Length: 456
Image (cartoon, rainbow, N blue to C red; front, side, top):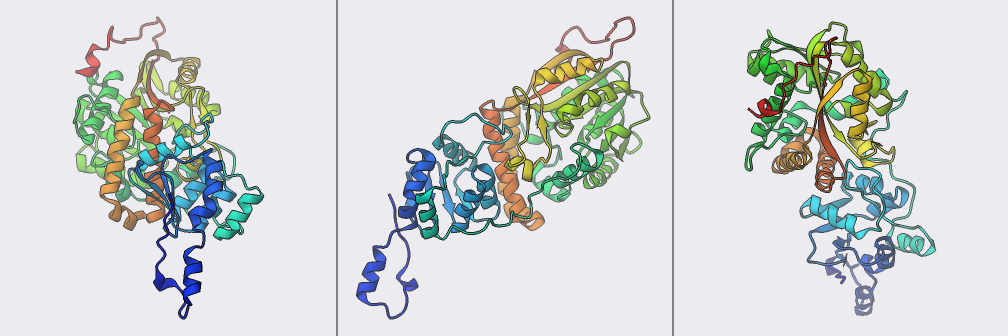
């Protein structure tokens, strides 16, 4: 079904009746693009595509619409077929999504030819747009040919040696140094940018984040050792450090390489009244020299480290623990592991140099470093719920978010988080907590016999 909503007011003045009749029968953008779209989707798409002239392709009773505001949307997809071209068009405002974005992305994905997912951190967005002679003719008629458009300014490709301290600093800054007020809108009062734990239905995001922090504290044994020394690697805005100090009297060192995170974390530590127990540093984990610690938490940090550096990472952290000390690694995982593709949306706009490990490889790496692995727990469904809360926060505060970071970056976050919901829902990715202990020389672990105390 196609419709043409061009108005007569746009017709040239002095047009004859014959001219008007001729123009009324001109093919619409949907007419011109129909064969190209059907080839891309190997049939009719499962959602409606609306073109800049108001004409449409696809069902009008689907989950929503993809609205092409300009021929430039097709131009971007032509030059970067797949998710990158789609994402560039969306971020630049040349393409809009009408309806629940996660459901629209799911329908869009379901419309495309089946292919193994290569980028598990978001719903894979591909097109089968083949620029053959017929497609070139159609694109020329639509005004979509031309040189590649420059990428939106939110895009980045890091330079230098991968996972060097300098390049890691650039990648982390790109993601986190976009304004603490923006993150407060998305994350809510807990300012915790990792998977929450929803123990009961209907619990608030803030309470679920506190439950996650408490679970980690108990796995690390902080509830049994008031005054224990904790290292929080990748401390974010200080939420875990504040919880451990407030609830269990821990002496905490939190490290981050984000300047904005550190500044806000220090402010929050002061406001919580635990400045005498929490120190926030701008420091790379490779530069810590004041161990030993009784416990280490690594929450959402391992994704930034990289597979090749993982043995070194766990080895360094192992060297910073007392015998009997525990470490908990909380990280997104994928079966077989994955390195984000350089031409993928998530790599260019969200997590440059990001890598996910198979949880089995995380266990092996921790064991090679000298940890005895004592517990592995998946929180996959909890992360989908966490993301739904973050998306709701962003949509509810959309105008303010755009004021703070610009529409392009706000669109990056909406696309990323909505696509990620689908990935956690369908088990393309998961998230695991892996707990390790450094045994005493005689083999004693000081671990509890059961998990019973962790949920108290």
